[in-house]
Length: 526
Image 1 (cartoon, one colour):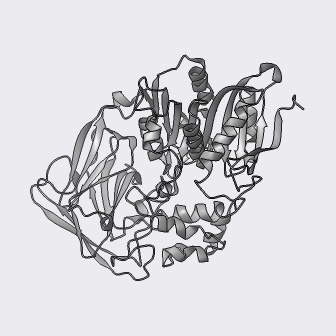
Image 2 (cartoon, helix red, strand yellow; image 1 turned 90 degrees about the vertical axis):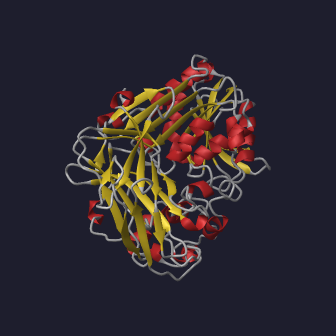
Image 3 (cartoon, one colour; image 1 turned 180 degrees about the vertical axis):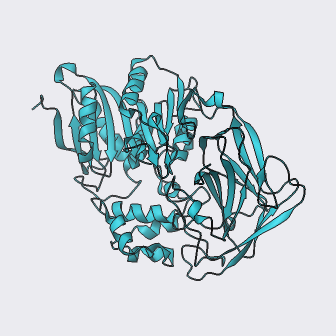
């Protein structure tokens, strides 16, 4: 039995003795003891057979476990609960096995990224490295924007296919919304689960807990003191790229010397480089977008576990538009803010307007400004009148931006509370509108007077000569985000709405503007 490459359906007790299912992929016994790569997943350990074979071929043991209450593991799954204790119990079991050399690597993406960090926080002396890919660290962080607005479509899709069950319901989201495309328009939002076609008792609790609800994963102080090397991997088109960057900057920051860390961000969605092709929506990123993530991970682990990469800091970041990789010791590299001002005539320019003005639109929650998939051409929305746009002249030189742009928005509404959705877009020479970054603000969650500084998502992008820059301001992004009702009622429990009159101001000095952290193309080219 010891000579077989896989030991499937082992039963290992969780923190309270609940049996949890485990598969173990082992290299030949004459190579023991070896380091162990550990994944704990709610999505079925059977999907990791190829990974297990790959780690085994490279001289690692690979242990993959169904989390409590999922697939073959006993108990009841409560997302983001029990992962610390169950992870620690698995680690303790592995450390006692004859094939373990006492060195653990926690490995996972999305929810399995959370379990990787939870285990590392519980057993920091044993976990020598974390390979973290787009980690989903908490429901309050994943299901809500930084502004606190519910990510309605994501919450509905994930809960419909994944939650409140032992197994996933793959494909159910597409089936339901193909038959009922307007389903997410139902009010109140908190009762939407009753119409989704599956019994989902946990749906409403996430909404009621809100964006500030704390998970049982490691907090900021724990991460800063974690003495664990870490490889952070993310995609520019993944809503969890913020988590990747936060972990890269935070993990081990309180220690001296700081543990090894590495960052890789490519032009990918949530599937990262494992998705086929190089295209996201209507933008193709070219052959450089394809890299062998497996080989990169093995190389990095070899250096860290072998002692040659101790204390190193590395960053490998794809620059969209330039379609090439930038490498350095950290990210973002140095930059200088460039300010593009909104002008009364609808232009966007790197100079102050001479006079002030106002641009107006009506926001109707019954006909909210629609969402588009990442990377998809937004030009078909040009006829919508529930937005204002400021567009630059054609660029006569490339504009390279790294870091997090900011929109300073001077705006007013007739409603008791409203949302402001701001978007920085490239208008290409052939007429496509390609989003580069977006941000949001719920005025009901802030008491600060305007103008408001709204942070956009992080970027590394070169806008080429011949394109134009565009700043768009609207008040919804539906169904990606739950819409403001315009009445001051809670967006998730209210049922009535009203039209709001929206005003965006331009001023000679401190009006609406787009702040871009610019660097030179030479500094962002490998």
